Image (cartoon, rainbow, N blue to C red; front, side, top):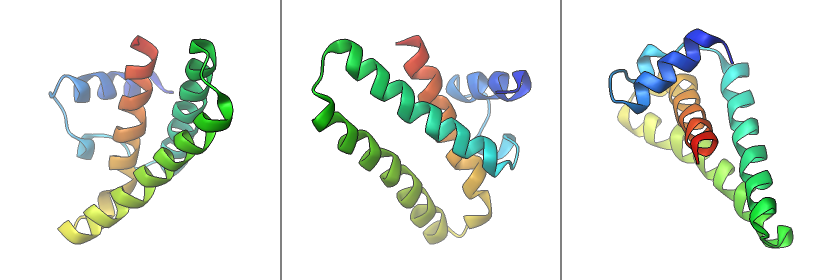
Length: 100
């Protein structure tokens, strides 16, 4: 992840910025979402969770983030911010997972 985006995500977590301050970059948003899924799977494996139960739950969580974000933004009339909000959601999740 580019350092500028990382700093923007940290500021977003500190409530100093909003998702609209992040770049419109769909591949980066998807990469952050994939990285978040992989980190969640890895940490659950390290804790000793049964992967047969964890994998569907983590994938369902990621799918819910993708679909719910689109629906809420569409209802609010801000669908053009979808990729920025998804990047904010996945990127902040990745930061929290890294800290945890």
